[in-house]
Length: 468
Image (cartoon, one colour):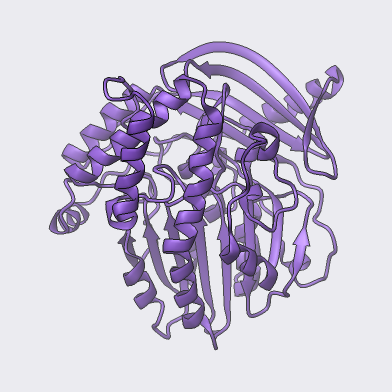
């Protein structure tokens, strides 16, 4: 059948920042802030099936997307660290290509979601920050498996770069610099996710300097306010026009549109944005499915996992799933064969590296096109079982980004029907859930080799003005 699958990733979008979500967890941490306006997402929720309690397998882009694409836990698909090993498992693009589908992949973060970590295997057309080319490619009659990734919710919140942010981006940075004394402030975070010219990179570093200043001074509400207003700017100025044109193109053909977040955002003493935290607001991500065969107005509060998306897609496409997948299909919930999700255990881990080492490796990559190896540590890990969530912490960041310190801590939460985590104490339950994590860690596969950028990709990027 001539079917079209479109996956849309809204990088860094928390589940409770969708207007249709009934439980605003962030209101507890930042009571003075109002939710963002998300009309475009609320409309998609009303038109399809909404899983408002979907748990991500990792709090950063690489491992989270790999879990979506493969239906396997990060320790099994090979991408579990922030930025190191390459993908080992077959993903939706390889599967689609093998079954006669044209595959299309657009990303705002080519340094992460690209050839360096093995994400372009099975991709026929790979696009960087090019919404227009993606929409044009979607017009063809061929059956497609397509993916569009947006970094606009990630900081610099709402803007992504000068081309998309324009004068509003410049005005925002100038206003922040006028409000806070950051001109002589030293900061270590120079990590990036995409290729930039000198002007764009300078603007990003100016924005990051403000972020670091606010964090060091514990101005967490101001940081989260930037995030919420950035969601509004991105949705209104970039995503709404994109989704309007996409849905017009999809009209009249069998299609499935899957919109998801990879992780959320949080600012507090234990959370520097997202990469080092397993906070509930970071791991709980939105999952919206609309399309030809998807009933409108269905909402599920019960927990599902990001690894459940690939089995769901394969069932809709009519492609036989591998018995090696860890996820379970959600399609019986969508079509009404089952009323509630099966009870499923969820895992999440944060494998972190030293920020300074990451910056140096990234600079080497941009000069040579070759990625080195980074030493990572398992910083935190979590398991969900039934109504409980258990977190085990092994290391902690000092001041968010300045270096990891050894630590040892465990936390147990009960997540009730209101979806709010409440700290509880039960030694026996902690021991049982710790054993689940131990068993999960035994399933790690062998390391995969690093993937270097092919020469033709480097030349392609250089032709478009990127300093590769």
